[in-house]
Amino acid sequence: MRKSYGAGASRICYQLPTGGGKTVAFAFVVASAVKRGKRVLILGHRQEIVDQISATLTGMGVIHGIISPDYPPTKLPVQVASVLTMARRLDRTAQPFDLLVIDECHHATAESWRTILAAYPQAKVLGVTATPIRLDGKGLDEIFETMVAGPDVATLTRGKFLVPVTVFTPLHLPNLSQLRTRAGDFALEQLSAKMSDHAVIASAVADYKERCPGVPAVVFGVDCAHSELIAQAFREAGFRAAHVDGETSKDNRKKLIASLGTGELDVLSNCGLISEGVDVPAIGAAILLRPTQSLALYLQQVGRTLRPAPGKERAVILDHAGNVLRHGLPDAPRRWTLRRASKSKNKAPHDLKRCKACGAVSAPSLFCSACGA
Ligand SMILES: [Zn+2]
Image (cartoon, rainbow, N blue to C red):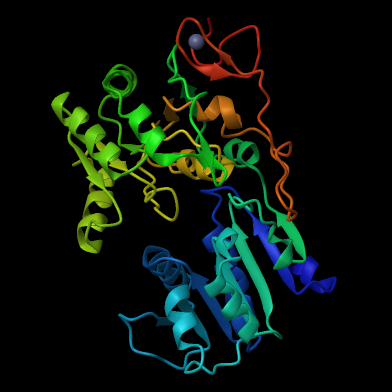
């Protein structure tokens, strides 16, 4: 990042896989900038992310203010802001920031982000994301000049910064060939109906019961009704399971997510909530019941399981959505670009094999990497 700025770039996109420590990485950049007397604004798109950034900065000894409805304004040189609040307060927050850091910057082509960026034309910009792609196909090159990629999943796993992962998939996946595609992904109501099929959910529950019962697991459902159905099916099978969504109160949401880490809860089912910014290293399994054509969404789902935790030697993905076959293994090498996404880029190698003995998915090889068959 420093080299790129030194070479004259002013707007950099930094890519690092989920669990790679991007908050710590940019907090280091912020701390160095503050030492040189610079003023820094860090933007997150949700309160959970703002809180997480604030906690990391505090841990690194960077004193900062928070721009959000729940906090009083301060004049400190480092501010962490939620995007919506910042966009509303632009005229009142007349601080001349020298550096803008944008967390989860694949959202940054949205209107509120553009408004903020336009207000600080002189500032250097550092966007960070695990997945520099948007579902709508827009490139990030209209905001960033250059991309800096950090180490990939395989490298981080070899260094023990992430845990290795085994992916299992059932012999029969739901047939989605008749589903319509809308805005780049499956039409949700059709998808929800398909994935709410009793046999599909029962197969996922049975899979969890057989392969990793009691391992803290997140389940990704298509929509809230689907996610609730799933939680109920897990409870009926004797597991402690709950459902969480955007409507769940903030406190309750925090409590439910935390209870996965403490072992009070086995399974937390959600629709689109836990894919970004939830940092619970104890999560050892992800159960995919939300088929998606979005590589970003898929990587964010599986990324939730990859953080190391005491006693956790490997993570398990139970893919009942066909996402791994669609997008490749979580640690497959990927080439990122700022340009508009083309369908052919980053396409999964379609040569993944399902082991007949154990159901694990791996790249073609003489032996199954999971069971040795
Ligand atoms: Zn096997």
